Each structure stands twice: as C-alpha cells, then as structure tokens.
Image (cartoon, rainbow, N blue to C red; front, top):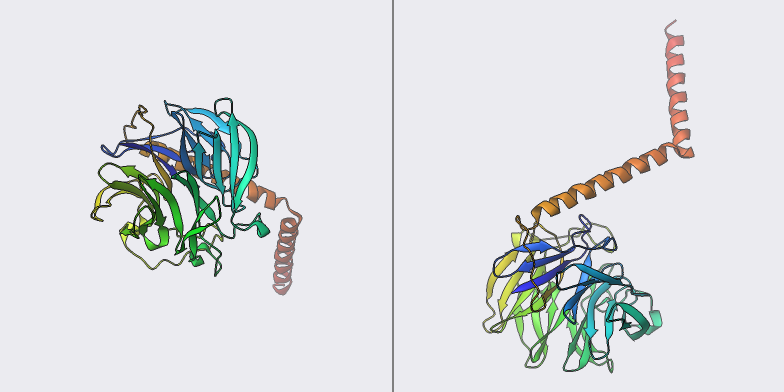
Length: 361
C-alpha cells in the first residue's frame, strides 16, 4: 500500500512538504512542490486519477499520475488551509479555512484546472467571520452528507485550552459529537465515521456503530487512511516545543521518545492493537494528512529514503536565514538610532581618554 503524506508547518525545509511512502517496504520519495509552499502542506483529496494537495497559506496543487505538478488552483478568501474535499458529482472543491472558520466551495471548470465561482457554504461563527475562534479544520463526506470538525472556542490563551471540540453536519448545523479535545481528520472508514481526538491520543467512532475508542500511543495523532482487514494507519507528529500561534515555548511534561517522533502507526480496529510503524522523524516534525495513492500510481523511491534532499533543504534554509540576518544587521548599521549610539560611544571614549591624559600630567 502506497500513500501520500503531507507535512505542515515545515518551516525548516518548506519545499519538502509532500512525500510518497510505501507502507510495505518503507520506501519514500519527495514530490516536487511549487514556490507557493512556503510553510508546508495540508489536506489531500483525489480528483479523477490525480491528487490535489492544499498549501497552508492558500492555494491547491494538482499532481498527475506521475506525481508531477500539473497545475495550481487559487483559493480566494480562504487562508490557513486545512482539510480539502473534491466532490465529483458537483465538480466542486471544498476547503476548510481556519483563518475565518469557514468552509469554502470552489466550482471547477476546464477538467478541474480552473475556478469558475466561489461561495462560503458554512461558517462556525457567522457573527465573527474572519477570526480563528473555533478552528474549523477537518472535512469529510459520509453517506452523502458533509461533516466538519472544529476545536471550539478557547478557554485560555492557546489552542491547548480548547476542550469543547465538535463534529457538525454541514447541511443543518447539527452537532453530532461534542466535548472533544482537538478533533482532527474526520474519516469515512467504510460504513463508519471516525475522528481523531488528538490531545486525547484517541481515534473515536462518531457514527455507524456504538461509541468506540482506540488508543494511539505518543505524540500528536492527525491523519487517517484505511487499510485492509479492518485496519487503519494514523499519522503521529512530534509534540510542538513552541506555540505556532504565540511563538512562545510550550510546557511539555513528557520525556517519552514516542512523543518526539514523527511516524505512521498501523492500528487494528478489531483488537485495538498497534501493529507496524514507519518512522518519518528525519523528514519532518508534523504530519497533517495521509491518503492512499490512486490505483495505478507509483513512484521511484529515493535511494536514501529522502534524507539527502532533507539535509540539502535544511542547509539552504540556514543559508537563507543567515543572509536575512546579515541584511538586517546592515540595515540597523545605517539607521539613525544606530549612528547616534555609535557617535555617543566614540564621544565617551574620547572624553575618557582626554580625562586620563589630563590626570597623568
């Protein structure tokens, strides 16, 4: 089984945000990305025999059967993209925009290569549109209806204080499940609807059967793909050491290595047991989505599992950051405040030297 994996908040090597992985052999290959991927990737959906991948700041990249970039779709008004979904019967692409807590619908033309029109079909809080209050993040179609997940309003300064997450049916706004601690990755697993409760390290059944929960050990789970024999694979990210919203250090009590690895975890839903794992820690810190590659699509594996490209990306990122720092230093040197400080320092040195000379006579 081969899957595409997207990495979000990929600041250290933003051009490496989408990776193909063979779950049987552990082979990997980076997919090319356009310049728009300046932070990382988000949701994945299939369109005909191709894949669409969301770019976090905005915009959708299309990959053909050779996993090469075949086009780019704009997403006007939607920013901080999360999950995306293509509905073939409508020829429309649905995009969750955490920036404004809204679900955007883009009707596509020209074989799915252009946007014809756009509308907002759902907003978590219409009175305060334009704010990330509920953190709308996940989207799925199950039995003909669309469902979304959201964190709910915060009771504190960060996302970690959002403990009343919900799963909502879009058609009528009905709350299907609430009281969730960071719901992500709504997933139609055959006849049942699943959701990941990330901070609780749990996969939960929402609909299609009695309440059921499966534990995912370690890290921050997000991203599901169905596997044979009533199994799933779950993406699990390293815990964030820094708040993405505030830029301040996160308080982390754990010292378990599992909490600081990036991996794909096989979970047997019949027994709740964890099977194989695929360690992706050398490639990135945070997984956003996992999706099976379309039938007939394959990739040429990297001879070193993508490590050389990752190292090259890190070196380039360091070079760019160092160049920015040099430019900033030069700008500061030319600023009036800097020149005044330098003049004052020279004047103090001359005064001190003159006073020392006089006292030595």
